[in-house]
Image 1 (cartoon, one colour):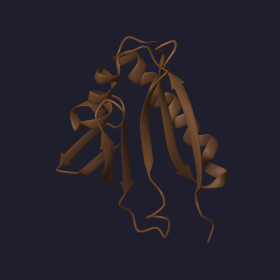
Image 2 (image 1 turned 90 degrees about the vertical axis):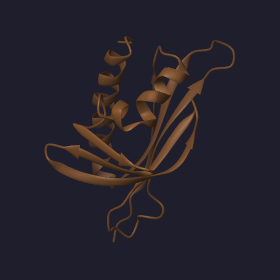
Image 3 (image 1 turned 30 degrees about the vertical axis):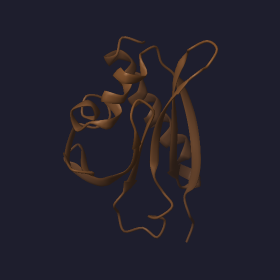
Length: 130
């Protein structure tokens, strides 16, 4: 069986790390740009798109820096696959970027990148950084 490949994409974004962290770490923040609706209980999150639910566990978080979720599906790649949203601040220029790490099958990577671009565009509009 083909395994998923890791990919990373970076998006410059004009917003403070603490503001961005609210949008990437809480159910209320994530439902404004990432999914149609998001419910959370503890570290378990349910993301809803067009009535379809995906469950993920928050496996790592660091205030104002990153969140990492692991999808709770039944695939063999489950232990290795996650998606991470990291807030990166350039030490010299203080420019802020979001670094996305995700996994997809080889033939779905471009589609996944386009989906992230669309979602990050929504987030940028939300924080006034278009």
